[in-house]
Length: 43
Image 1: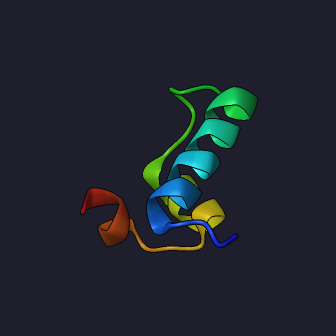
Image 2: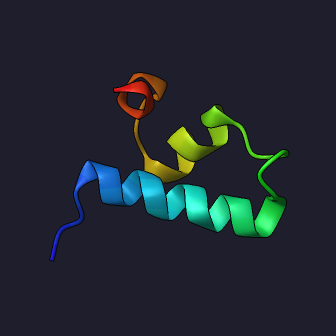
């Protein structure tokens, strides 16, 4: 089953927050792991 973009972003953010911490995780890292752009995160 294909994940929606929102699910990909949330999964990437959760993974990074758990491994690096919320403070150390930036938008660029989330976008890279979710394989999307920063504009997609803001929308």
